[in-house]
Image (tube, rainbow, N blue to C red; front, side):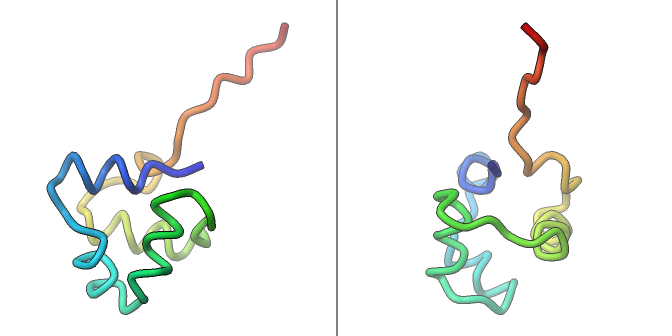
Length: 67
């Protein structure tokens, strides 16, 4: 899962703005933000570059501790 929606909100950036910068449709960015569709690694790195952050910051951390 990704944190695109959360990061955009924190930075005060709209999905429309990101879609324009990415050259992608609003619907595509909205699907990424709602985790209905996951961006490829290349797209994730491009989003991170545009948002001036590390790609790993866009990925939700999971706790995979063994029980």
